Each structure stands twice: as structure tokens, then as C-alpha cells.
Image (cartoon, rainbow over all chains, first blue to last red; front, side, top):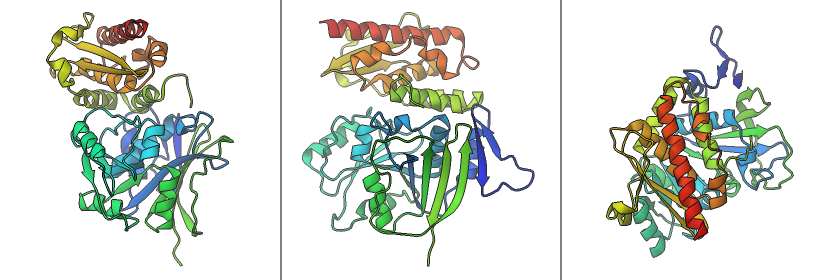
Length: 235
Length: 144
């Protein structure tokens, strides 16, 4: 499987292809997917052509492919922390990322059967008003618990930054992604478009505020998956 | 793409296959660093652990089945990073699955990780044996 860089065009003489399974794949993808600025917040989600964040199996598993996983890895390496909502951590059966901590945002403290292996320092729980049960879970998992002022709709971004995580990639779910977009807190949207109609009806970015965007990057793989990046167009 | 393999195992396999040979070995070492310690109740009861005789290094496993969910624990010495890495892959990939899902994992899963150039066949057979013993424990614990 190959991933081709379409936009922006590669400088003359540089390869515009990576072939998965070859040495140097990670380095080249890292170069192509550098963060938009120093200290940023990015979204990374996958959707079907009809804009659903889940496929027929009820998760994004049936939408993703091997190249998408490689790109997800590069976007994680570019960040200081991976942020997800509790529902996504549960539904998608999140494994802890290898090189970056995972921050899980929960309003209620209810994490259901999300139950990662105990892992000192690799898990951060974000809850504005943590329950005793959540504090105990955090202890058991060796997770850090950050809280903040629930009146501030972006308290968790502030808490992550104050904790030293200035480059943040949010992998969903759609409600959290839309919340960040509506609050004007997103520097770049990275969206994988899977070549299928999912007819599964979970809108990937259910925003309430119209905003013009500019295409800042486009990759494509051999299976017809598109990897789009958009930044806000000001004015 | 979707496959019959449970999502966490498919994710781990794809992460290996995306990399070149050199980086795959590095990823295996990262897994070996992530093998969680045994819960206290087992570290005090080594008799509950089963040795994987097929592995040259002393690796021990224990499988729990509770409320229809499998949890796999393992311990292996830091001096045996390959074996420890394999145990960590299985602990992370199998924990949280249902017994049926674990029993359905193809026996050749260890051979699909693209490590046959970097790791000796003997070691990969050790991982296959580990998977086999895990399935046997799951079968015993769901039959009771």
C-alpha cells in the first residue's frame, strides 16, 4: 500500500510517495504532517463519504485501513497528548497510544467498561467535578486526574496546557470535535474520507456555527482513501 | 479494512506492518516495556501462574474470565525483551475480549505481525504456544 502526497506539492526532486512496510515510512509521514504552528489543537477523525463517523459495525473500525492507521500514528507523534471523549474511549476500545499520553474527557466520571492496563503516566482523566469513584479508578490505573472550572467550556484544554501539553490532537468523538470547532479552538482539521457509503448516520462534525475553511493538505492512498487537512480561513 | 480479527489485535498487527523491518523490532521493544505488572493477588501466589514451557525464557501467564470478559496477565524477565514483547501484545490485544473472541483468534496470529525476518522462528513459535495456552485456560474457565 502506498500513500501519495497531492497537496501541497512536494519540492522538486523529493519523493511524493511512501510505501508502507519500508524503512523510513514514519520519518517521511512525520515530515508531511508537522503541526500547523507552535502549540496547536488538531482534530483527527475518519468519516464515510456520506459523513458518518461510524461504519456498519457501529465503530470507526470498519472505516479505517492500514494507511489511515499509519497516518494516525504520525499525527499522534506530532502531538504532546491524544484527547478523546469518554464515549469514544469506550466504544472504540481505546488502547493506550505508544508514545503519547491519552487524555479522556468525562463529564459524569462514568467510564463504563473502558479499562486500560495500569500504566504509570500514560493516562490522564479530565473531569471538571470528579466523583470519589473516579478518583479511586485514577489511583488504580496510575492515571493523573485533572479538573477545572466547568463554567469555562474549554477548561480541559487549559488544564492540558497547564500540565505541559501544548500540542493536542483530538480524535473525537463527533460531539467533542464539534464543541471544539464551535468554540473556535481548532487550528487544523485532519479528516480521513473512506471510500464508502456507511448509511450509519453518526454525523462526523455536527457543528452549529458556519465557518469558511482552506484546504492545507491532501494525501491519497491506493485504496482511494483521502486524507484532507483544513485550516480556518479568517475574514 | 474490517476483518474478523478483534479490533485491538488488528490495530497492533497493522501498526507493525506499516513499519519497515528495523522499526518493527523497535515497536516490539516498546511493547516489552509496557507489559503491566501482575496484580498483587497473583504476585503473592506464583502457584496460580502457568509457565509457557515452549518459551526458552521463563514466561508465566494467567487468564481470568469475569462477567464474560477475558483478562490476561503475564510476567517475563526484562532480559527477554522479545518474549516479554509478545506477552505484552497478547495482554493488550486479548484483555477486554469475550471468551468466544479469544477462542476465535487465528492460531497463526503471531506469524502475521511481519516479524519473521527480525525474530527467530523459535521465538515466534513460543508466542504461538502462549496463545494456545491462553485459549486452553479460557476454555477451562468458561466450562466450569
